[in-house]
Image (cartoon, rainbow, N blue to C red; front, side):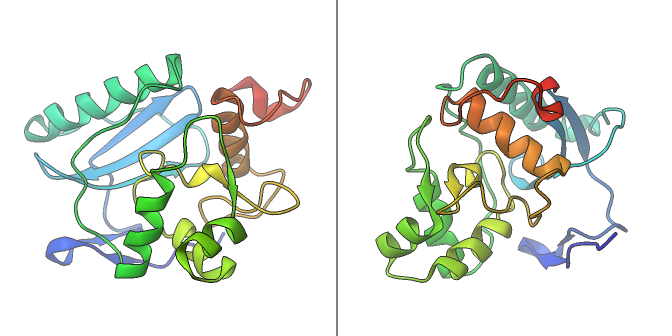
Amino acid sequence: MNQPQPRRVRGGLRVNDPGVPWDAVLCLPFGRLGVRCTPTLLLQTEYLPGAGAPRAPAPELAGLVDELREQLLAYCADARRSLELPLAPAGSAFQARVWAALREIPVGRTMTYGELARQLGSAARAVGSACASNPFAPLVPCHRVVARSGLGGFAGSTDDAGELLGIKRWLLRHEGALAPAPGRLDDAR
């Protein structure tokens, strides 16, 4: 299995590196979410495929991780619930523009990569690359960007039958942007 390439975040902390453990792992209705943070800032959240147990944070990180868990569970109960937590600065200036635009897409709506690219005066592939590099999913809702003829990729995966695109389907169905598809395994999360 290919591992994502490491990225640098504030303070030289490497993320997406198998050698750096998650500060916490949350088990949520849509799947598992790895969390890296300081006591006051989220550094990264990432969807974690596969089964596994939750991981409690160190005591000094518990306040922020507990707030993240509470907000995500509230969102899972009501998709209109906003997710507002302190995010560490990350990415290039272009990526930051894309991520800011993602946060403006309303719940229950989607945009294509091309539509978002035109809005930003860019190219669809560049937008797709910025979405794949999003360090704060689902707080920065890259799942609301889809291909012109289908779901497109998600969290760096284009495996239509894979768990990551199953999470994208769950999130879009939960928000009312994708019709339910009875009998699909990814609906059972």
